[in-house]
Each structure stands twice: as structure tokens, then as C-alpha cells.
Image (cartoon, rainbow, N blue to C red; front, top):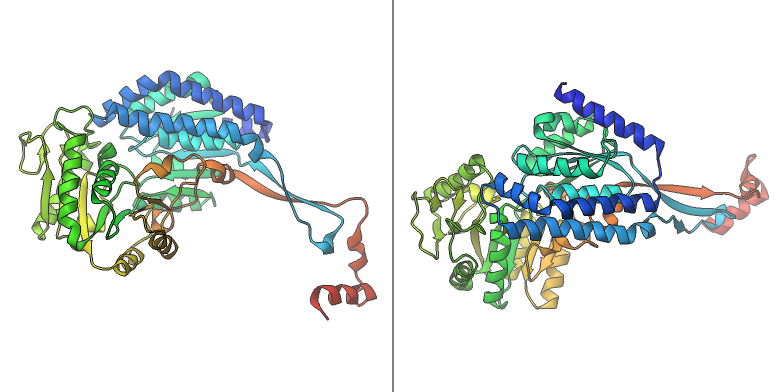
Length: 477
């Protein structure tokens, strides 16, 4: 059986099944979500092991904290809220059209396609799946070629709890990304790089397929002039090194008061030493996913060095390097690296980093920070460290980003009741919470007229007294 035929077969089966049940009840949706929750909990150890195999070394705790727990919590929140979300939303009817009743009903879209990235393969497949199931849809997920063990494990899990015509997982061996995006989905979700996002949107456009694009971008972490530096350094360190920086909302660079850069470097290094007393053989120190990504990051370091950056590879336990690059061979582990004296000719300042490299950009005035952020493509996340409410509000209302987090990093993404999505080059559309339900539903406007038809009074021929009265009432003439 050819690759294309396999996807076609499942796609047609899901379309047929959806047409037989166009509006699943709240009970049916909750039962589907309960099966998904049971599957994740039963397979959690297998999923942890699979992720570790795919990365070469992936912290068990990072998989539990960033993938398993958020997936389960998201499912539980949707289960609790879906009956409420499904209720028709009653709206006001204009006086001119009375008597009548206006409402919006929320219908499932149909068959949803999900293109999953490699960095969080569990959460970024199960999250959209939960939202789509809560809205009553059928779903096919295409996993990344870079996480084959996780893909096979998730596929086995889904097959144990769902019929193929309801939820199905396609591995990269069974379907290419472009062929998946070109299907006539009722909605397509893609999470990944901005460059690939453009290709996905182009492929989807031939069918006018609506898309949700969760992309990346260079998310800044901004430290105010008087914020406690110990707190900032520690929280930024956690956000940067979690999954070893392979996170779409990881702090990409730090914007720090010029007079406090040395303080930040010192305290950041101390935070890393506390988190990772060992690195090379530490199972909690996650590897870079593959050789291509590993080489790309080393190229960033070499490019920055060649163009005048000061490179500070943090190795608090003083474990001997096998190369001069701050890396340990045969492990795809890179030392957490600070970059000073950067400029915008360097690749590390032009492209999303997606790894444990952290440029530090000094600033002199708060106004300069606002201008700097607004001159760049709108990021997926913006982090600002400040206890001054007036400055916080000013920054929030004078910059654009997909999301913002004040005085911490990363954790806004795991808030089940809040939407997650980008803006501009960091994406379009959103899911999570009620906004996710709306993304995967069609909000159908419905106007219901009773037996009595008041509209006939304004039927032609025009120029009658009733027309003049209507114009007088509504237009003042």
C-alpha cells in the first residue's frame, strides 16, 4: 500500500464517520476525552522512555512536567467545561427585526489534521487532539520524523483506545509532511518553524483549508532597572535550559540594563551550577535532538566568535570537554552558553536559536527597549521582569506578542483556561481553553422568526408611510 493511499483511506473513513454523527453529544465528547486521559496515564512510562530514546538523553522530569501533566490537565479542564461551551449563545435581536430570536450554535468542523513537531511531541499532539475532541471532531495526527519512538508509542496508545475513523496517528514513514498538508482538511494545525509554516500555509491554500500556525520567533526576556537580579537570573535560566532550550517559547535573548550585565552573568552562572552539578553524564541534562540541530548550534557559536562576540560556555562542574566548542562528543550535549557583545550580523541574532545559547543585549533607557521590541518580528512570547505596575502596563500595551508573562518564563503556556497562539511571523490562530473550542468549531449564526412576520410591512412597493416612519425612527429623517 502506498504512502498516499494509507492517509487517503483513513481520511475518507473519518469523513464518512463524521457525516454519520455531525453533532456528538457532550456525553460522547467527554467519554472520548476520558479514554484519551486513560491512555496517557497508562502509557506515561512508555512515553517517557520513548522520548528519552528519541533525544538520546531527555530528562524524565521534563517529559513529565512539560508533556504528560499538561496534557492530562488540559483534558480534565476541557471535560469540565465542554457542556457549558456547547450551549447556544443567545444574542440580542435588532428592534427592526422583532419578533425573532437570535443565537449562535457551535458545530464541529469535521476532520482535523495535526502536524506535530519534534520538540514536545506528546503535548503538541495531545493538546490539539484534546481541543478538537472537545469540539466534537475527528482527528488525524502526523508525527515528526525526528521522534520515531514517541510516534510509534503514541500510535499504539491511540489504537488501544480509539477506532481508526475517530482518531488516528500517522508516522513520518507513512506520510510526508507536504502530502499531509495538501489534504482537504476542515482545519489544519501546524506547530514548527516559521519557514516551514509558510510552506504549510501555501499547501493548505489550494483547498482553502483554515490553518492554525504555532510558530516560534525570538522571544525576549527583559529585565527592568531595579528588579531583583537573583530572581531574574534563576527564572530565565530555568526557561532557557528546560528541554535544553528546544522550546518555541524559550527566552531567545536577554535585554538587560547595561550597568547590570555583569551581575546577571554571575547570578545566571550560579543558577546553572545549582541546577546541574553535573552535565556530561547527567540524565537530567537533555541532549540536542539530532546531529543537524547540534551542528547548527555549533555553527551559531563559531559564527558569533568570528564576528567578535564574547562566548562564555558555562561548565560549573568543570567536566573536561572533548572538543574546543564547549561540547561533549557522542552525546549531542552543548554547554549552556552566554554570548556578549553581539550584533545583528551574527546568525544567533538573525534566526531563532532553539538551543542553550543566550545572547545578552544591554540597554540604557526603558524607551529603547520598547523601540527595540517593536522593530523586530512579533515574538511568540515576551517576558518582562518588573514589579512596577505602571511600566508593566506600558510595555504590555505598547508591544505585540503572541503571549506575555510577567516575572517568570514558560509557564503561561500551561494555563488551561488561556489561549495559546502567535501573531505575525510567530503564527496565527490559537488553541487551549475556550478559544481552542472556538477554533475547532463553526460558530453558526441562527435567527429564528415566529409565525407572525413583521418584515412584510416594509416589503415593496416602497414609499409607503411605514417606510417613512422607519427612516424617521432609525435615521432621524
